[in-house]
Length: 142
Image 1 (tube, rainbow, N blue to C red):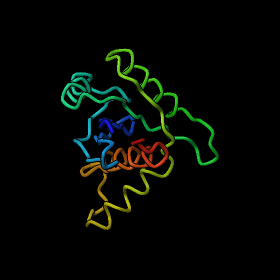
Image 2: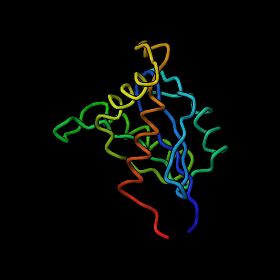
Image 3: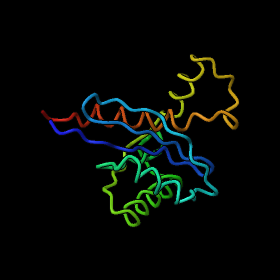
């Protein structure tokens, strides 16, 4: 089996969570959260991550409503994914990320997080959960 590296992003208008993982173990590790202004990241930071990890695919979380419908944040997350693809020519897949932020907060709380998400964000934990969920739905083939 050939190992694949994937980067995942949890898009947000103030912060973008990031995680990297590989297909041999289907696990992911959190990376530093990327600051954003109105959903616009420092593209040099994104480029540096792509150069460092050289992902085969980028997964961008799609924050659907609970009923499966799209919202404004979905449109912006898709735009973010399209820009990654357009600027860096890496394949990008959008992936349903409903409840990952809630799950990330629960995991952080269990590990002693005090609930101040502005100073100690959980966005990269959410990105890790997005990537791990993606692998559960797309298991690597031997």
